[in-house]
Image 1: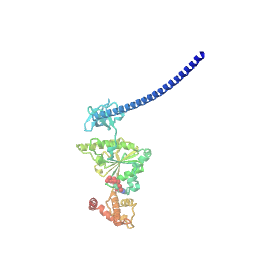
Image 2: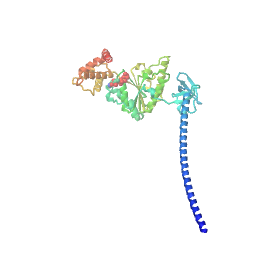
Image 3: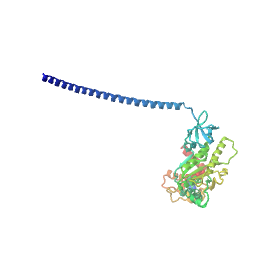
Image 4: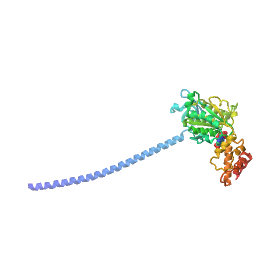
Length: 409
Ligand code: ATP
């Protein structure tokens, strides 16, 4: 009886453990399944979160775009002067001047006379300082980092070169010489003389010798339509020169802004005067022992305002004349250096035939002679080609023929 009961108990416990194992396996499977479902939901949640962030970003972008479209336009003005207690004088682009306040977000150092500012349309207070772009200057300025003209490419101007060496080259490269002697180098050098005689060439050669950036501004292009624009350009030119120093500022056609001041009441006349005043004040505030030199050129020295040629401004005057016979030979030799010339070419005779020709005309004669030889398919340029070229270039009627041939051919 006891034995029977023991056997039954054994069977029960085996079945029970089997049941437990089965149950455990079932639960483990279920657990795995739930685990996987959890992972899936978690991933979906992450995706939904990403999507939400993306839409929020999109919304912010659209809102700011909308705000931008809704903002009122601002006026552009020029800061004339900074007063006390956060007030400034600005000139609006239409002309009148106003005393206005400025936004607290603008740094005090950014508000300097001459900068362009954005003005609120209603109360004209300064909202922002407009960064200065050098673009408008491009048309008025020619900037050559290192011109490649040397003194040996200039004929017959040895005396002028000597003066420039002393006044500009040494001021830029050996300022200690001036210090030793105890004098200041000239502030500005004015090259004056008839057109086409090599004034620009001289300025470029000095820039080459001194490794200076050559900044050429044409006076007539500084005469602008809008009030204050010419003066702003003058300021920009000097600022650019300081940035690119050592630099040589070369103002060509100085007479366009520096002609004697007449009692000209027109707004155009006043604008030219304002530009000149700006140039004078830039020159006055300039240290001539610095690394920027000012050269200018004019064909009309007779009309220049005496204020310009006062000591401390263009105080060194260099006359660049029409070349004499000897200088003409030198210029011809320079421009024919790379040409193949026939044995009959006689530079003395060419120089005799080109009385009154300037350097630019001599260069044109050489070019024309070369073109004659090319047209006739010769091996070298002959004396006759030069003589034909002289007739063409030196005779104004010939010039008309030449241009009309070119124009209507
Ligand atoms: P402008 O007053 O009309 O501006 P400029 O006096 O500045 O004239 P440049 O522009 O220097 O004259 O000269 C024009 C060209 O004539 C030069 O590119 C050069 O080829 C030639 N030329 C003028 N003078 C000389 C010279 N003395 N030696 C060599 N070439 C010269």
